[in-house]
Image: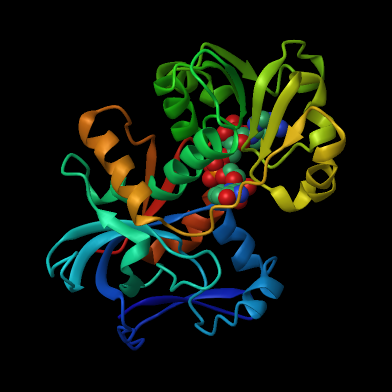
Length: 311
Ligand SMILES: NC(=O)c1ccc[n+]([C@@H]2O[C@H](COP(=O)([O-])OP(=O)(O)OC[C@H]3O[C@@H](n4cnc5c(N)ncnc54)[C@H](OP(=O)(O)O)[C@@H]3O)[C@@H](O)[C@H]2O)c1
C-alpha cells in the first residue's frame, strides 16, 4: 500500500508499505479520501515532535486525522463493506495519509447516505469540535450572541451552521473571500478582518469562539459581555488566562477535542442526513500531489477543508 512517510520532517510517498495489523476493538478500513488540517502542516514541520514523542507514536506516517472509506475487515458494529468516516486520535491514533488504516471503532461512524466520500472526509473534525465548543464548553442558549473568528475555515463552516441551528445571533469574521459563504451558512453580520481590525469592533458578545489561532484572551476581552466566555481553539496559548478564571467574571474555556467520538459523529451524520448541516466547500487533490495539497494550506482565503483522493 502507499503511505505518506515523514522522516526527519520530509514527507515522501512510498509504495509497498506493509498494511497495518488489526488490533482488538479496531476495524480495518480502505481509505477513499483523507483530509488535511492545519495540524497536519504543524506536524509535518516538526512543531509537535515533543508531543508525538511523549505519546510514543512510532509510525513514520504522522499526518492525516480525518478520513472516509470502506471497511475491509469489519466487526459486528461496522461489518465489512460498510462506508465509514472518522477522526483519529491527534497523537496516539493511526494516521490516515495511507491507503489502509486499522482504527478503533470508537473514533468512527457510518457515513450519511447523502454524502460523497470526498465530503465525508471533510467534516468530522470540524463539526465535532464546533459542536463541543458551542454546546458543551460555551453552553450557549437560544437567543444568545456569538462572535466566530475564522468562520469560513474548516471548523468555522460547521460552527456557523450549528450556531444558526441553536438560534444564536452570529457575527462571523474572515478574510474577504469568506464573506458570502458566512452569510449563506447563517451569519447575521460578517466582518472582513483585513478591513476592520477586531480592535475597532465595539459590540459585545456572550461568547467569542476563536478559530483562527490569531488572538489571545487579552485581544478579545473588550468584545465579551461582563459574564462572557472566550473559547479559543488553542487553549495552550491561553493557559494563564484559564488559570485566572476564578478571579474574574469573564471566563476562558478549555476546548480540546483530540479524537473522534463515535456517538457525536453519529449525531452529526444524522444532522447531515436531515439537511440540518451541510458539508462546506471541499478542495480535492490526488494523493500523489500531496506537496501541492500541503502548500495550499498556507494560502489565505481557503474556504472549508482540503482533501486528498486515495481511491
Ligand atoms: N482545540 C481543539 O480541540 C481543536 C480541534 C481542532 C482544530 N483546532 C485548531 O483550530 C484552528 C482552526 O482550524 P481550521 O481547520 O478551521 O483552520 P482553517 O481552515 O485554516 O481556518 C482558519 C480561519 O481563520 C481565518 N483567519 C485567519 N486570520 C484571521 C484573523 N486575523 N482574524 C480572523 N480570522 C482569521 C481564515 O480566514 P482567511 O482564510 O480568509 O484568512 C479562516 O477562515 C486550528 O488552529 C486548529 O489547529 C483545535
